[in-house]
Length: 193
Image (cartoon, rainbow, N blue to C red; front, top):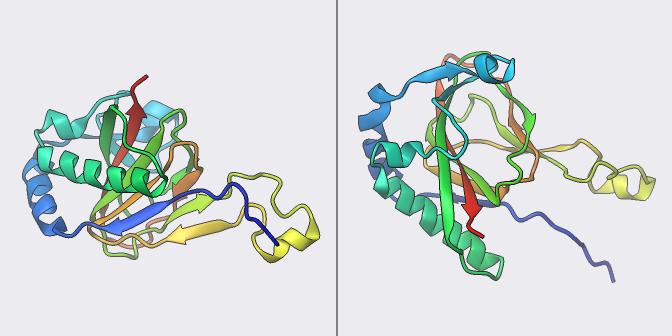
């Protein structure tokens, strides 16, 4: 018998009434200022809304319907993991990917749960991807049948899709090779002590 230990739970779902959420987001888009990430991290691969650790752009602009939708999906995610969502803080920001933009591999640790909601995408403007958290995977030949070290699991974005994953999970975004600008809402969930 083979038992697969330590699987990484990734949640992906389409928001049922995403057009309504997008309508609320659309109303605040003209107020969002974006900054080159090069000013913050020394790279200029994409732009982000004003981001200070633990800020909540959704709360700042009164996007309570979006906050509630995120919470509903986080509750479903936690329920699938066999636990209830504890008290938490939400940190959120928008990211913008124009032609040639991408996100290097990174993680959001020590956040408990990270996620993204796709507000605008043409589904060809750069796949989201995960990398295995096990740096030694594939160093033994028989395990290479299943997953090679450094292999990426691609996730094609769709408008209205939400993805949730552990904050320590390494992820990134492939290069946007289209003329379409993708806008994504990114967020972290921090469980209160």
